Length: 211
Image (cartoon, rainbow, N blue to C red; front, side, top):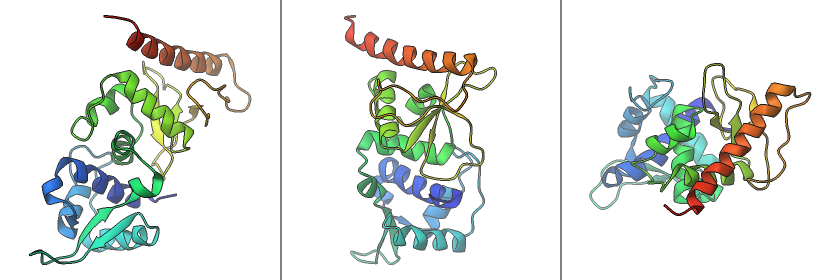
């Protein structure tokens, strides 16, 4: 499992490859700035160059990052991610993973909005379809709603999180497979699971019905 800092570095490389392709692969300085952005990052970090450089070396050893040595008029080493290849991620999945790595657990609506610059999803149903594919791959899980929240959130399982919430649905082979509840579920947990599955069916049905 990736560390919190490894997740930040890899998330930035996944994001910038899609949002600023003319600057990609990134230099060390540009990558440090991306990691320490004040916006679109939760939590905000203050990483030093030597910390990012050390993490890049670790990610390279995990075959998740490649170094691009100076050539074609470029005078410094640059860095690119190959995690999408290593993990078998298509473009929609890579966009969702990037945002989850950079901003922690989020709702479907938040993910749809925050991935717009990387990947345009046709509908919330398409976002959830992609999320369930990531659930099947063991990379993402749905979390139980917290008090006062109207929607459940999604959490990546590739890296450490500052705080890990209770999963609402564990790994399933398909979106409609029987979900396994945490040990000793009560009435609230059962209702949470039913609401999640009903919401999933409603979004799929809405796509099938004519306008």
